[in-house]
Each structure stands twice: as C-alpha cells, then as structure tokens.
Image (cartoon, rainbow, N blue to C red; front, side):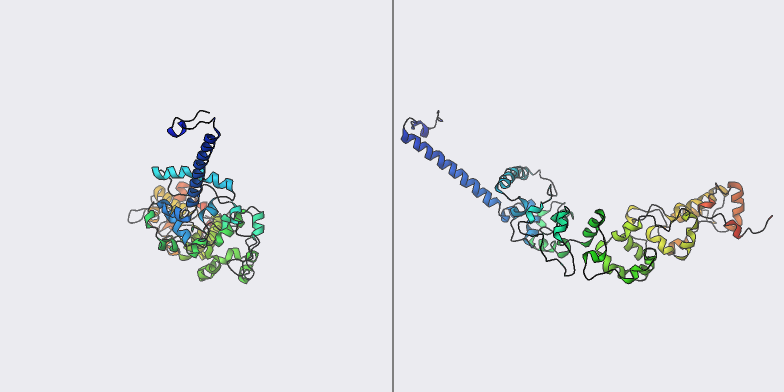
Length: 407
C-alpha cells in the first residue's frame, strides 16, 4: 500500500505491526471525527431554530411558532419516517443551501409535493373521536380509505396556508414578526372551511345533505317545499341574512358594483353561483320569446344571473345580457328606418352608455325608441318581420293583440 507523501506517513513502516496499528488508530480517529461532525450538523439542522435563522423561511417559522404544532419539529413533518429518508433529505438539502447562497431560490418558496399521510399518522389516529364541533360527523378512516389525504383538509394547520394566500410573494420576509405570525394563524386560516368539504363531495359525487355531516342540523322545512329551487329567490330578496346563516362558508366576498345586494351575494357565493351558471329547467326552448312575462313581474330575479349591460369578468354574470338582444333591435330600428331620438343619439347607444344593472336601470331601458307604435309599420314594410328580428323578442301572436280586424 502506497501512503501519501506527508511527513507523518513517511515515518510509518507498514511492514511493522506497530506502525499499522498507528495508521488504523489515525484513520479511525479521522473517520470518527467526521462522523461526529456530520451527526452534529444533522442534529443542528433538524432544530426549528435553524430554519428560523434563514431569512427566506422567516414566514414559515413565525407561523409555526403560533401553531398547534409548535412542539413538533419541522423535520418531523417534512421528512418521511426512517433513517434512509433522513439521509436522502439531507443530501438533497445541499441544493437548497446552494440556492440560498447564490440567491437563486424561487419566490414564493413552496413544497413540490403534498405531505404523505404516514407523516401525520405518526401522531394522529384515523379513529380519533375529537372533531372541531360537537355535532360534526367526520369519519377519518372512511376518508382515508377513499384516498382523501390529510393535507387536503388540514393544509393550514402549521402555516396558515400563507403561500396559497399569496402572502410571501413580495419577498419582504423581514416584515414577518412574531405578532404577524400569530395574526396569520387565526382560526379562519388554519381550520378547514366548509366549502372544502362541499367541493370535495361534489367532485366525488358524495351527498351534500346537511344531515350527512351534522347530527343536529337538518334541512329547513321551507327548503322542502315543492319548487323551492325556483322560488327561493323571493326568500333571499326578503332576507339575505337568512341564507347566510348556513351558506356563508361559500362566500368569496367579491364586491360587484352596479348590482343589487342579493345579486352581489349570489354571484360571490360559490354555492349559489355554481347552480346559477346552469340553464334552469324553466328556461325552455322558447324562453327568448316568452321570458317577458317573467321579467315584467320579477326583473330582479333575472338580474341575479344576467347583466343589463355587457358583463365584465369581475361581474361574474352569465354571457347573455339584456341589451344583447334589446339593444341590437333598437340599433337596427334607428339605422334602417331613420328613427332617431330628438337629441340625435340612437336609443341603443344611449342604452350602452348606462352602466347600471339593477332593476331600476333596466326599467329605464327601452328596446324601442319613443313613438315606435306609430312608426313600426314603416319599419316592418321596409325590413320585413324576419330581417327586422321582431320574433327575437315577440311571439307570433303578439301582432294580433292590436291587429284584430282585417283590411
């Protein structure tokens, strides 16, 4: 065996037992020192305080300090159980060290994978009886059997979903004090929301009935009345707070200017919105022709889903809006028949200038210009009924309401 040309090794003669023993002791000492150093480094880096010293992890550290898991080390959750997984993680962490010193880490910092259930079940049992509220039914073992991961419901338990909420995107980590950490770990950010349950049940085609998850909550009697799916809007218009008692979980809190309070609530509530975006059974094939009868009596009901004016993305309205047809008819009448307002501005252009989408705004909107009853014969004679789009709004019996005689 050829030894390195160091002075210490030059003095060793490996043909002698004594020198071989010295070499063994020396190598063993070096290996032991390195092993202790590595073990010490691993031990130090497993302490939560080590994570807190890294300024880019400051938000995660202060939220963890304010969480119910403050007695649980970061590595207990972020490293799978087992010595092998620990070693693999520490080797992979060298990349994170390089990113830190080169200032090339991603912002916001987020995990590339979901925590597996085996991490949670080190401490928690799927058969636990405790639930956030005394009347809730949450069979954890049944959820686990269906492949529902723990973090799908409990994602905010340690850090309050600060990354998902976009709070670390600006990179201002110095602003994250202990007080801010406590503020961002409020109950609203850590406990699973009811809409998480409802959305998951809907996707998996599981019942969303109240009694399926609550022992003391059942569907109100007025909800069981035949046709409630159609008539519930009248109840909402009378007292929207009554709806909010149970359906507040789905409210996104969007402010939509220019609409009624009921419409704003319904469009900003995913429970209402997801249903309202589907064409109602009552909107039959001839609805475009006959809808005037319903709109005349309850235009507020129309404007819960529809806009009077062209909808913007933030309006959360259906693509179909009142002036899509009514405005087009007025414009055709003014351009083809020469019927113009006294001000010289076509009626359709005046309508388009109106920003409001309330019932009062709609009532101010007229599809036909003033004096249309006297002027429409000339328009029909010039354009014809079909080209004039009369039947876009009127049914075929509309003419006979006035034209009862024969000429």
